[in-house]
Image (tube, rainbow, N blue to C red):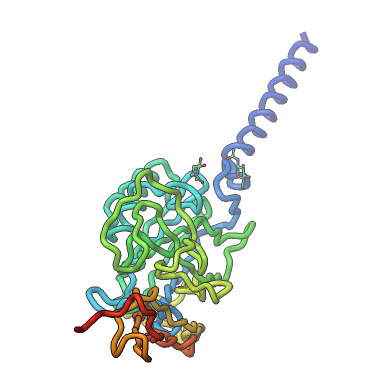
Length: 333
Ligand SMILES: *[C@@H]1O[C@H](CO)[C@@H](O)[C@H](O)[C@H]1NC(C)=O
Ligand SMILES: *[C@@H]1O[C@H](CO)[C@@H](O)[C@H](O)[C@H]1NC(C)=O
């Protein structure tokens, strides 16, 4: 009797220990179920500042001056865990990414993020106003939770066929600590859904759709491309972001309500990109002027495709003449 009671008791104890272990493994904040592995105790508040560095000095080729001039769309930022992706280099653009990258419409993108929020994959969505110039700032406050410590964002390059800048799933948390400050230079991406080569190309859908790719000074490898600068090893950053943690104190309200930016934010990039002159092929030779076979000359011409800028190679001669050959003479009598 005595031993049987003792047995039951120890069996129950063991069961309890196992159950407790299971609880710790699955529910404890120490090990989120493949969330973001952030073990910070509480949320963190950040200021995100987006800065455009898209100047005609850094990007002289086809720099958009009119209808519309160079500018940035509103910025969409999403905090999330590993079960959500706003966009991904090398993967196909979602419908939301496509409509945002092509025409700056955020409805589909927001719908997808809201759906993911129901699944707890997305924490919060933020946006800032657009910037009416290539150079300028916009900012927003971010509230990051440990269970969704990743941040993704996108800003459309305007005008452009389907080009944007952004970041994909940067983790603002490191173990049990929130990062103090993160600075990232941004480069253009092509959403792969529109085949335009230049900022102001008309809409020309890519069929079948291609994957999202980074635009570099050599890719796409075509002289007509607005970002094609064969002399550059890499493009200067066209934009950058700074994400800095705020102490939860009084300066926060002031900062946000007026969008006053910290003084430390100065344009960091003064890139000057030389742009070489580009000329067309020669026209065919014209007819001979002057008496045939005695010093008559003929001409051919070419024209400027791209004016040089920032001390790039100047344009060559646009006209050339040569002596006539007898059979191309026009008989005037
Ligand atoms: C869980 O996340 C880690 C990265 O933190 C990743 O390497 C791993 O593949 C993920 N596992 C699953 C099942 O998603
Ligand atoms: C495009 O992305 C898909 C999914 O990530 C991948 O299976 C496919 O191989 C990619 N295509 C190219 C051309 O890289």
